[in-house]
Amino acid sequence: MPKGRRRWISRVVRARGYSTPPGICCAIFDVTLAALLLALTSPLLIAIALLVWLRSGRPVIYKGTRLGLHKKPFTMYKFRTLVPDADKIIGSDLLGDKRHLLTPVGKFLRDTCLDELPQLINVLKGDMRFVGPRPIRPEVYEERCRQIPDYEKRFAIRPALIGMSQLFTPHSTPKRIRSLIDNEAIRKNESLLWNVYMVVVAGAVIVAAIFRGIVTRFYRSVIADMILGRFSEKRRWERIALGSASAYVMEEGSPKVFKRIGKLVDINPEAFMVISDRPAETPFAHVVKLEIQYGAAGARRKAKWALVECELVRQNQRDENTFEWVLEYTPTSPLNFYMIHQYFLRESVAGPC
Image 1: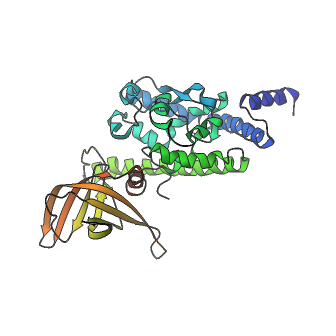
Image 2 (image 1 turned 90 degrees about the horizontal axis):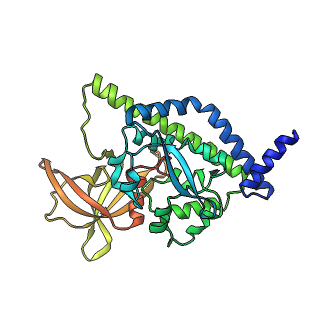
Image 3 (image 1 turned 90 degrees about the vertical axis):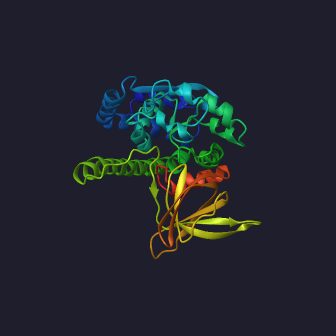
């Protein structure tokens, strides 16, 4: 290897704070892969930039302050997915129910993680690495994360483009749960094989998410609307159709005893529909257990469940023995909130696992 190139690699490695042989290998891997991906994806970067500019105007690139190694602030880049000045509206909150701030193409870019591509520049600059905990806004850290046990561990390494918690949990997952996942990944951060494995997994997941997103939008806008004439309803929330799912009501005085009330048909972040063989009592104010089965038919299936507090908002009678219940719900704890968004609303990039 030429002496000049060895010196450049040495400066890059030292700038990233690595000293052990595995760490040096990871640093070289990060820089090499970031440069290669920037070159290969440059046509895609230009296409996304034009799309954001034509549909949402300027600025195309969002520049936000994040906390890096040892809490040192740096400027992180991404394609803009929110309306201008959305940071002032959101503050230290998460996006959550403020999803109306998303631009016309913002939801697709976020769902497929394509909005994160400009952070390859951050990797080249040494602000970030490929695999590790995601960077966090200073105001979110101060308001929501400072008191979380062991949260400070993430600042011992540089934040990353690919985070396990970002990949395998929904955007709305409570920070305490995400912190547990990230801390497990931090333990493996200087393993080159682990970094390569996570990059491959993330690439496969993101390509699959992009394909699903394009197919879904093509079906809705071209096949369903233009060809079949099934014009989609304009709803605040998209309803998620469920397969093998049921709802159970908690028996009064018996917090561990639940009685099935019917089939759980669909759900959105505010309400769900149950098909039952009996009418609901009014007023209805109970803790309800939602349960869904995962796994291939004929194989051993896994049951995932969540507890929610419910209120009946509408009831329809289909026939003599079939009733539709529509119930608004609130998860009873952060863990149940996570279970709803992960397994029932299926909001993670990688899907339920």
